[in-house]
Length: 602
DNA sequence: GCCGTTTTCGGCCCGACTGTTTTCAGTCG
Image (cartoon, rainbow, N blue to C red; front, side, top):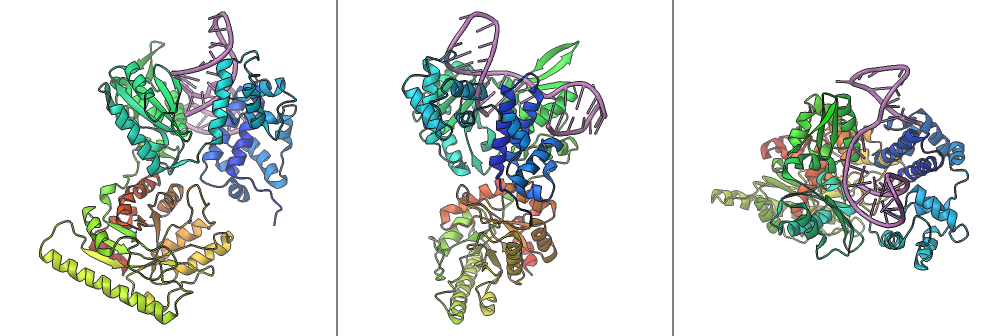
């Protein structure tokens, strides 16, 4: 066993960014491209779906695009010994406090260095931010050359904002905020069209800043209207083409405006991701085209001529590829696929014929949370959503409060109720009522015990059509034990679905460690399925693992994990995750008709 | 320092906004 030091991806990214900053201060002209390389490496690490430590364990650091032989050697030393001689050499002579100050938006390497140098004795390493805030309050910064009243004010505001900065927004909340602002923009008759941009449009699980695009008839008017948004606590910047406001809680909202004839280029540019755009522009450059948010520059007689682009389809077609759905734009191979005309036909919301994780209020005497809506209410609502079938998947009856016979009795009772419901559905169909689900499946979400066993006796399992299994305890087992645990649970014949497989909770809890290739293989060999849980706090499997699963032919189920009938509407978030994971209709179990699904259960 | 559909050398995405200047540097996305 190697004695190793643990660094998270975020920590590594910060180190790499600090190195880039250090090079910027030490002969930035000479190191121009080295700086870019380190910044790119930092970006890549931050966005990597794999923990760097794991890749390092497997000797695969250079698999990350942007990390080559040099940086990987330095990182290797870092993981082995906790330090890197080269990194220490590069940052030698630079005050450590400056790297702290760089966390303030608006303060980069040069400004940070200047501040720490000027206020040597006033800015300490440990309390750099607090010290800087004090200096700004005492109005000592505005007196420095190159600074002024405004920049001093900005520093104070920015520090206040990072103090109160909330964690990244979960997707539905960000959408709600964006929709409110879009509604505000649309009140202005000069706005022709608006779209969300950035990670919001790409449907990432969590959102940092909210970006919005608008095409307009009069830019100044639209920008001014945006700046008057009633909930804005301050205007960060306001130009001819873009403006930024801050909402309560420090959340930043950026607006970009453009005329309709060039709107496609703007939409493309600000939807990103940054990595997708960089890869796209590098490809275009090699073919004599230069891409920007204004359009595409084409060389003609040695001159660059701007071609305005009205739609995104036109934009991608112009550089010789298919339009790429926003959810795929992460530089994960989508550009190559678009060039070969081999993009996946992503699953759509209307393909979904069932919700396969729902908790009703039927009391199974579980130790977990019960649903709030009755089975009848849920069936009614599911019918409105157009589903053909659904599954009731309450948590298993608590093991500590029941003996085996009691558990079996409860489950038999539930079986009877579900059978009755199915009978009444049949007779309702005889009366040809529309918008009705055709079949309700009797299922259960069963805890996976730390040893991998399931706390439901055999006779209880017999009452079920199929079962979901999931982890709700002992999240910290090592990878080997955790994998063994899950595989044992999945080996029960009735266990079909591994629900919210990483057990992560966004902004709250990291996922468990599992040997995914082993899980994937087991699922394929034994016809077991992995869930994409559509609960906005979970979105689990995460998109990058969906991509891996789908590549390996693993089948996916979608379930809302709804605990009341309103939450059935969260399905679209699960679909977004599936799409970001390159899933097609064929990859998703509950796009199958009722008949096909029944066959798959056999 | 990284990388490959002009490939192992010689390039490296593109532009907006602000403050403090008096033509630009710094920062950000």
